[in-house]
Amino acid sequence: MENKKMLIGLNVFDGVVLENRPGFALTIGDGKAADYAVCHFDPNRKNYEDAVEDAKKVASIFKELDMDFVANFEFQNFGYDCKSPDGFDWSCKEGGVHRLNLPPEYIAALASEGNLAGIEYDEFEHCIINRNLSIEMASKRKIKPPVFALSESDNLNEQKALLESQLKEFAGKIKDAGSPALCGEHVFPVLFHIFASCGIIPNFKSQKESCSNIQFAIAGGAALQYGIPLWNCVDSWYRLTNPGHSPEELYSNLEFAYYAGVNRVYAESCSPMEKDGALTPYGKKYMEFCGKYRGKERSYDISDYTPEICIIRQDDSFWGQNDPLIWKKMLYGNKKIKPDKYSKKYIRAIRLVTHGKSFKNSISWDNIALSFLTKHRSFLPMNSTAVFDDTVGYDALKNAKLCFLCGRTISENTLSAVSSLVKENGTTTVTPKRFLPEELKNKAKGKYCEIEYGKGKYIVTDNLLSGRLKKAVKPFIGNSDEIRLTFGSEEIRLKISADGNTIERI
Figure (cartoon, rainbow, N blue to C red):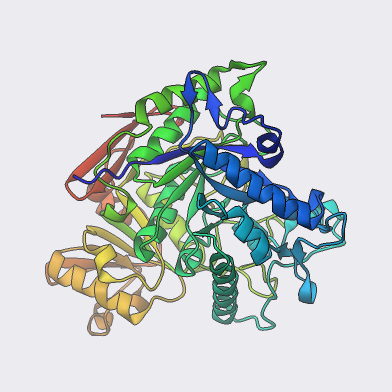
């Protein structure tokens, strides 16, 4: 049996490493507390040549500790001026954009010891869809630079294609310079599929302001569909509070990553875990987790996930944003392209399969609405669910018992795959009339109807929250206090606590 163990990491800063103070992220208690580190670099604080040399030194220190590391870059998200004292600009500003600029020489320095696991563009999707919002806020709304040049058209598909080409070029240059991987770190559960299609590893935040297993269902679907690893940042922040979650919630989110087939997980931040050289309750819970799960055998990972509920939709970057000041109604960061009635359909599907416990119009506690006042919880009931984009093929869908077709468009290849599943495997598929096989469209009558098709059936409706649909899908959505995950013959059932913040395997 292949051991597909999960690697466990912690974050640290380059200055701490260079000053020979490895700190909590590297050593704690009686031994090493992590398989790897996520190291935050601030190269703009030094002259360029010094930054290159320091990158080599950090790599060497981790090599001596027998650890690999992910190089994280976040400084560019908060300041428009990213110049070193000698004038080197660590941000690209050609054509009025603003994004991280890492020269090949600098990436080669990070990779010089052969232990660079990848480069992480911190909150990359946040910067794209919200047009570098932190810079806009810091400049009192005077500077509003997009990450990449935007399409002049208001056509969503043209903007999507442009973003994909830009991401592929950006990722390609970083990998060509010597980084084994590139990942983002997603605050919002969007762009996972577009990133994955460009070879950028899905890396979802859990805890934070989104529901952890909704994030997993979307990011995991992207990793499964595009055949790449899945990473997870268990983030201690909640809005402006750190720690914003309990030690027990931290433990359960780390544990969920193990059960969910995540390849790499790391905890952010480490500051709540240690005080005056002693472990806090957060540190004790982290070490308890490491003691139980670090190096623990696991027979599966995300590549073996066999979801039984599949939600298919175009990845248009909509998560429920609805606020004129902060979370603006725009897609892909382009103000010309607004969400429409199709954008929210998959959010309604998620609400349906979570027994009505997720929000009606959003999948994040960042939404400025009544949901903003609802107490955060990490876990919602969900039964073996994954979200795919509109090009997903048969193999990723083949175990589906229940399928949802949502959004603006779905490719003919995907519709054909779903048709085969319904007809030959007995899958139940919920769909609007326009995604039905042509030979069935004349049978679709009224606001709700069920059409038998081979061994399965199509449920045709535009209302994903109707009472009739809730009754029809009830046999598929599992128990209202459990998360269920399936990896081939391996079944994981997790009991959710009453407050939604801890889990226990059943």
